Length: 434
Image (cartoon, rainbow, N blue to C red; front, side):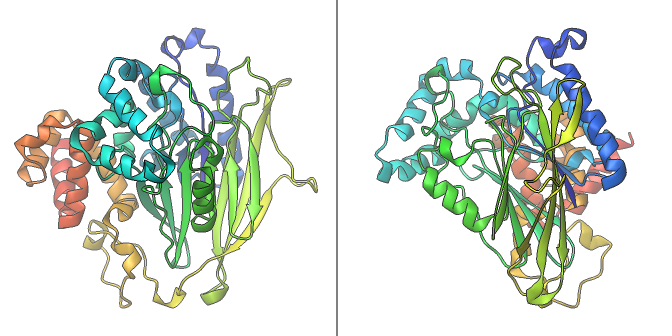
């Protein structure tokens, strides 16, 4: 499996609306060209992972430009568009919404100013309340509208983060966790301070047999007031760590993990050490039984200024590829392929029982056919989505009071829980051919 890790693209209005006058456009073009050349040797990209700051000020027009560019990027690197995964960064937060709403400011302050030992309880109280939970996510409205196509939207009170499974080889699952680091971002309309944000223990990484956890977070741990707890959880429970925000391209390894900080696709050209970059990360499970291990090969590419071209960062020994091997916990003999209700139509039941880890409906929505279905569902008109969801009993009239990303995100998850994904697929196909 080949992963393309990018971050901090910073589509900015009005520049991104007038491509001929966008000074950042050439750097995105150079990145796309370089990726296209490298996949000729490495093979097609299986997933594109974006660790935040897709927009610059959370404006809907910025996401329109970002979506178009990501579609072109997916085509250039041979990746299915439904295999794009995103998390929010601080530039996804629309500060105008925060400053215009005392309710948002009050909810953020109640969490930020709580005593450390009471902060988790305060977040749970605020996020689980229908009104304040929605308030905390209101500054991410444009981001959620963009992320819904990729099933990466967040909503209260039960989707503070998302998780999706991708199937590796040798009976191993790659579980992506997309965590939300921006609940307190932009408080009072001001820039964030390092050590003042809050991730919380409510965003939980679960260890599981035969599962390799990959975590995507925009902010590195040192930006959180619960820095040590976040760092320990990520190190102990995730094998691959992807961060953005700092605009510094770095890699660190330990016996149990490999950590990547992405260089920004478009850092501020005036900032010190300005250096666009991206990562290509190859994963393969080798060995069998208790000897299974994950082999990681990472290409860290950085743009040099003159002549303009992406070059690989090198290891201390001068090699162009960073390599690491990590053992995989679990019982390989008990593993069956990841299967979802949609895939079960054409695939006969496996003789070996599917382990409990694959019973997570949300995670199983990462299966290729299901993500394709979700992507196609969102391409329908609003009235067509409404017809399908109402017809299958996945929503009720009262649900139209909630934003679309939440309304139909919940409906699709409910379809998975009720075993109705094949019926959703049939209804989508009918409307696509009209």
